[in-house]
Length: 271
Length: 70
Image (cartoon, each protein chain N blue to C red):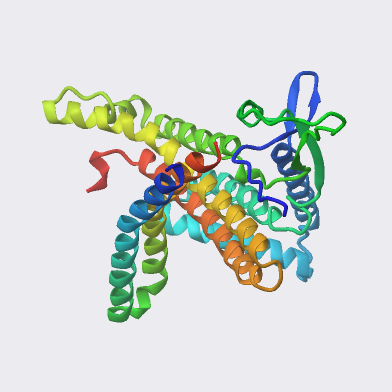
């Protein structure tokens, strides 16, 4: 009986000039290319003819929805123009990666790679009869793995989001932004500033682990379900994972948006 | 013994977020019941809060997965 093999990290499938190309890098590159093609096509389809095509209507609907969503939170035209593209980029990259991992073949087409048997296994003193072949243990490595099911991808997204928060904070409030962190006006404010600094680091952790945990847990769930009962039973879980993929993309972009917005309004202006 | 640790990490870690999400949804639904016009706004904020709460369960899950597979 084949055993269930789950790897928490992405496996390298090729090496180019010393750089390991993992299966999740490959998947996220494919997703990125598809997204770029889609949005280039979307940009090319925009014509002011008075009778928009179906594709143009779809694209306009998507962009309009995002603009309204951003406007309902930031309530300033300048910030809407500034935040909408980055929020849309986050959303579409994450949702496309989440759903790419659910496609048939992703995670199931791959190759077997022999690995050295673990030392503990041979140290038990198994007597190998003369003439028997010791078969090296085979580990299955898929060619593709959802990009967001790799902690490196989600950590990169989280760092981008938190760095952008600081950049927007400085560009909107100038040096006044740093009074949030370093404040000598009272001992309590000084301590709160320290906590704020820790909070920024915790944000990276929480962004990265939330997305990675959800998507990776989904993959494990699907793998275990398929392993237990291969027919019909895993299907509702695919539905659940489609929903989770959407919700996590939405949550990541909405949280980024809320943090961007909080960084641009100073402490004093809130009330 | 390690499997026990995995089970305990996940099981204990899911208690708090379970209660939290329950409270959030209960309050959110009663708010929608009182004021159905604001349901879209309440729903968005409720889902955001649920994501925060759920993150704690996800930390437990990540710890459990690391214990199990690494």
